[in-house]
Image 1 (cartoon, rainbow, N blue to C red):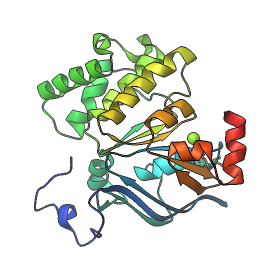
Image 2 (cartoon, rainbow, N blue to C red):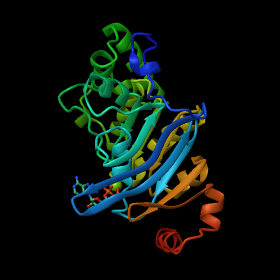
Image 3 (tube, rainbow, N blue to C red):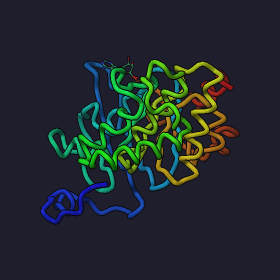
Image 4 (cartoon, helix red, strand yellow):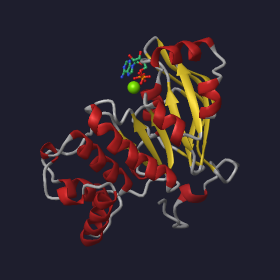
Length: 263
Ligand code: ADP
Ligand code: MG
């Protein structure tokens, strides 16, 4: 977690804005363009500590870009993003440290292929968190056990199934003690029989109280794990509601149309 060092200007800087104590991720008036394409349009979104938000919407609506802006893999053109009250800096060491408060799991597992499973989960702890090697290994083994791949620790990613690799990717993200976890279509690249083993790990994480933003087409997961469904289309948040309400009574034509195609 973020340093409490009083010398650290970010921990008590004047840029900290007043907020509800439970607001963890706050996007306010966020705009983003790719050339002429206005990919995120005036996005206001507040994610509360412990909340599970599922983001759905047609392909190209800006879901991945939204996730990528939350940990500054993409810059934004206007608006603000704060994580636990701290604005995301543009660059430098502070960015690396704050970014590591945001765990990210991608569709493609993005593991280091030339490192073992264990090393994959140790690396960020040592490099970014400055954890001692022994402690990093202990934590990595515990996390690999937690996601059900403890016996695979000494293998290389290519020796694992897709579902196992994605669970390693989740363990690697968790090893940084993130305040929030972002999942961008984490099961889309998996063979069908491996989808559930990954969703189950995510379900457990949600039950354990992790704050999560999940882009997914798995509506069963949305129904059972989400506190809130955010529906995006054409770079905008078109509507948001509890899963019960959203799935039984979508209000916008865009959402009705989308649901009629996928359900
Ligand atoms: P989604 O995840 O909802 O499918 P994305 O956020 O990936 O949507 O993309 C939103 C739009 O932005 C799409 O039209 C996509 O082609 C475009 N886009 C995404 N990334 C880039 C990029 N790096 N450069 C240019 N256009 C991009
Ligand atoms: Mg996407």
